[in-house]
Length: 212
Image (tube, rainbow, N blue to C red):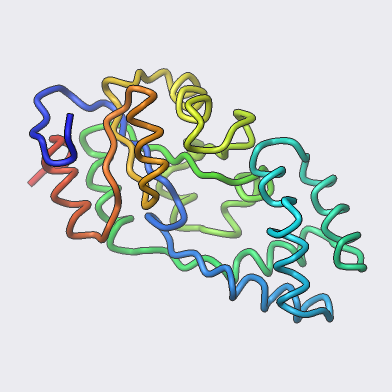
């Protein structure tokens, strides 16, 4: 199926990426906030979180939350508690009201859920980090760490669908990453690249999951 082909089957589940779709993500704001809270620099934060591979390991489920915080503190040369980490992570997130409204509309016709490349610190504290997503999706927010694999690895999608009791042919996946969308298609899901709310609305209509 191509990205523009009509869809004739019934979609029972729409699976959304979170950051980049349901909310905007600002890595620089996160780095600046953590630097201010720990008395270091944004460059040092970027090196500790991303250049070291620490975030990727946590997102892949290789580090439990406390182990991640310990390792981050060691890299930054300071103690790292959850409150400090959450404050900096929260600074990176701005909910996308337009796409959240579309997800709420889709929920009238099918089940909605989230699959995000994130560790347990994000999913465990989503009510603090991203309250609108937490309210709308409830317990159906899944981080890649739970499946031991990051999108676009097929294990991430299929593990999530197993938790939901869904199957690839009746699931539509939305992500702003073309690689993640292709990974979903390779795993047997229908998938669309997120561009903006207007495009998302057209795609959800095309797949028959919007009313009105």
